[in-house]
Length: 61
Image (tube, rainbow, N blue to C red; front, side):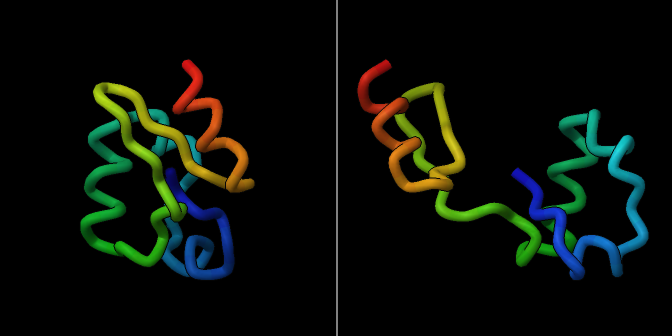
């Protein structure tokens, strides 16, 4: 769910810290531009729709 681009590097966050779901939520609340988009949600399931065809996995499953 977190983009690993130049903006991520600038935060200085250790990628290993993102093994904790609470750390991911905290990071995205503090830096919303780091969230991968688009995200498809269906019930209790979600996918990062990159490439866009991944949304079909969500709809079929």
